[in-house]
Length: 76
Image (cartoon, rainbow, N blue to C red):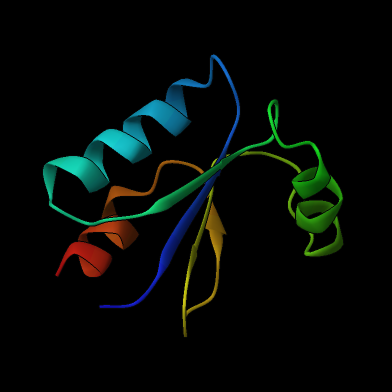
C-alpha cells in the first residue's frame, strides 16, 4: 500500500473528517500537525498549498481539503 501523509492543524474540521475517513476505511497514515511541527508550513507553501488538510500519497498528486471522492480511491 502507498504511503499516505496527512498535514493537519489543531481545531480543523476538514482535517478531523479526513483523518476519520481514513481511519474508518483502515488506511494507515502518518500525520504532521503544523501547529506542533511548524517546519512543514514552508514545505506546504512551496508546493502551492495555502490550507490544510493536505493529503500526500506516494505516486499521486497531493490534494487539499476533505475530498471523500479522492479518499475513496485511496481506500480502494
